[in-house]
Image 1 (cartoon, rainbow, N blue to C red):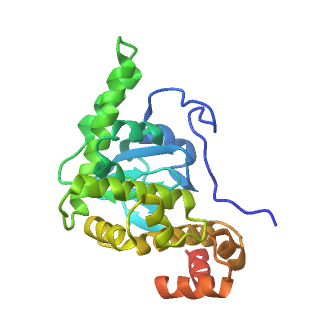
Image 2 (tube, rainbow, N blue to C red):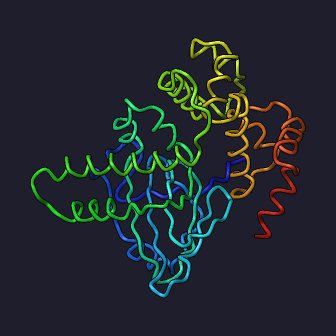
Length: 294
């Protein structure tokens, strides 16, 4: 049976296997949202990371709402949104909402933050942030440089993209700050490698011991690092990634529960259903039914 898929949008000339046509893309919220009656249906992008800054309309009302991985959050009084590649997201903007969206290849973040794995790891999860200080000045600088054509434009955009990425990573790290274990850089590097492996192999039946072996550490050490930096053991991170994809498939596709189980490496659909129910508090079928009612 052909697999139903969550819509994947290609933007600004992006296509698999071809270079992104510019360092980044920048546009205002009205420029994009007004073309779609201020509503963007849930979708995802394969290779792109997006940063949003959303300000409310001048009349003081809220700017609408964002739906990220099936969870709806208000965009009020103002909000910054980080959307990594493959995160399912949609928006319902209130007409007149102002702000910016900057889109860039996820690979460029890998290069820019290669020496700061903890910051790169902070950007691997989508989030809506309500920061005490506005990043509007960064978006405005990006927009001005993007619209220009002066000498060194590409270099300036690359530098500003790095500033923007660090701002978001700091905001997310501060929000999720937990225990800072000894040797934070080494631990963050290990965690980043582990998360990259999980992202690549979450559809396989690999267990924690398999990941630890590939990383050259013991399962106990890997879990200790994961718990110190995220508050959750490594085995939970593996499960969460599989369940995230399960929820996506249940909410946005017509795949049967058994098909989803096999897709995620579970040999027994009944076991998958029990794992899902225990972790999510409801069966896969009940979750799907609830999502279709929203």
